[in-house]
Length: 190
Image (cartoon, rainbow, N blue to C red; front, side, top):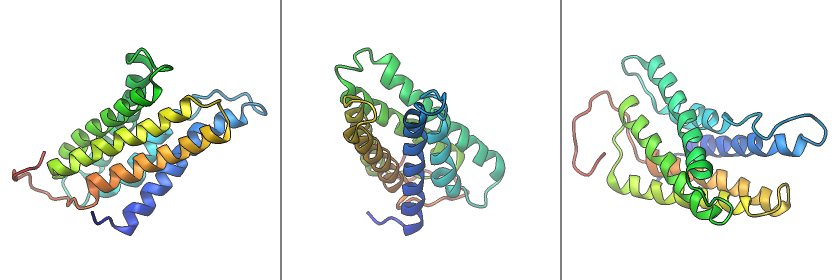
């Protein structure tokens, strides 16, 4: 799979900033009165700004499409985390599995947004790859949850999980994708 260097760098920046937005409030809470949820929506914002919005080329209603993608990115992050921690009841016993499922669920929401707002053709093989990568990335984040909070292992798994999910999903969905102004159906695309 060929991925552009620009997409790779932007998704790495997004993953790193997402990790910092999740981990820094907890690490700084001993010095400042910060909740772990202080910057909760920022991973969705970062993925939207660095990975999704650049996918929108010169099409009708570009600004509205960009705003829609940003909102969908935040919603995908929020819903995926909700699925992982509130809907799946055994989060502490099966953190890796529930976070893996929520990672794949987030991919499905992003595919829906990308398909209709960009418009973007995504092949079935790219979708399946993204779902797998989303599951593995979410599972890595789940491994961070079973470690003691703020331990080196926990922070390592958070960082690797965010980087793996965001770089992997970006590469799988957008590495070969083209944005077009038409929606002509093609074989093996969603």
